[in-house]
Image (cartoon, rainbow, N blue to C red; front, side, top):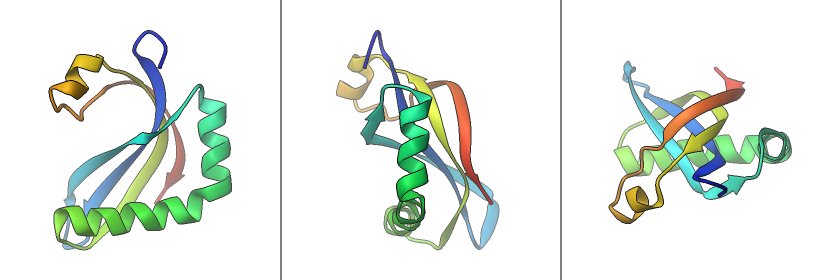
Length: 100
């Protein structure tokens, strides 16, 4: 992360039973140095990533979910926010790599 800027995968999930309710998931374990590296990763592992996100969403939220979209997101984050438990970065740009 340079100057609090990094690139991550961001997935927006919706509840199958109630599609207007959405949740965002951020890939803190996978960070990239730029959009291109993130996009290349998605191009190589997209199917596995989408399945993994849906499995994680079902486990985390206890309901069937779908992926509305997934993007490579440029985010700004204060490291202190992570220490304090915040998982909501400031998204300053996105490139959609999958859309329903």
